[in-house]
Image (cartoon, rainbow, N blue to C red; front, side, top):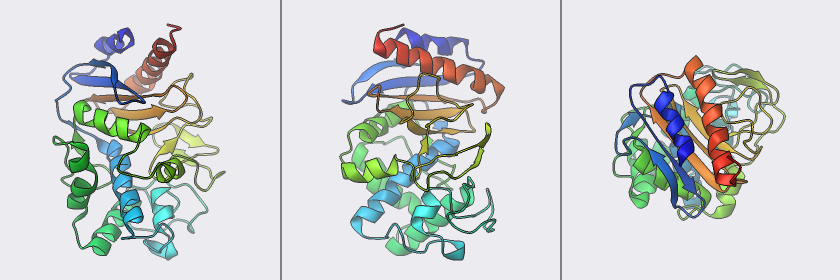
Length: 273
C-alpha cells in the first residue's frame, strides 16, 4: 500500500506497520515485521482478550468482585473501577467515572491468576498467544504495559479481532461496544473527553476529538495506542485493521502523524486516494 510509505517521513529510528483485511489477508506492510517492539498499553487488548477467554471458560465472571470497593471484572476492563492511574488507590466509586488505570489491569491480572492458579503471563500465552501462533510475543511484567511483540504477530491478532476463532463472536461484539456509556474522563495524551467511551479493554472511537485515529475513522473503530509509540485499530466499517509499532515514545510527532496515516490508509482501501 502506497499510504504506508508515509512512515518513511516519521521522525523515528525504527518503524513497522501492516494493514490487515477482515479475511485475515495483509493489504500492505512496511518495515521490519519481525522486529520486537515494547508495546506499552497496546498490551491491554491482549490482556483483555485473555480475560474474555477466562470468562468464557468459567474461570471468572464478568460481574464478580475483583477490585476495590466491590469493583468487578467488568469495571476493571472498562476503566471504571475507580482505581487511580498507577496505584492501588480508589479515587471514585465503581461505575461513576472513566479513570484510565494501569493499576486496574494489574488487579485484573492478579484476579485471574488467583482464579486459575496460573501466573497471568503464562495464562496469556496458553490462552491467546500460542493458539494464534504469536511466537515472538511475551509478557515479562505488567498486563497493563509490559508486552513485547512484532507486527508479524499482531497481524495474527488483528485477524482474530475481525473474525474471532478463540472467542465467541458475541463475546467480542460485547467487548467492542461501549460499556457504561456517557462517562467522562481523560484520554491519556489527548485530554478530557465527554464522553470517554470504552469497551471491555478496547477504546471505542465514537466521536472523540482530538483522537489518535483519523478523521475518516468510523465511530465503531476500536483499539489502543501505547506510550512507546505504538497503535492497533480495527475499523469494522472499513473491514480492516492497522498496526504500527515504533521505537520512539508517543508525543507531538505521533499526534500529527498517526491520523494522517490512518486517513490515507482508509482512503486507499476505499479506492478514493
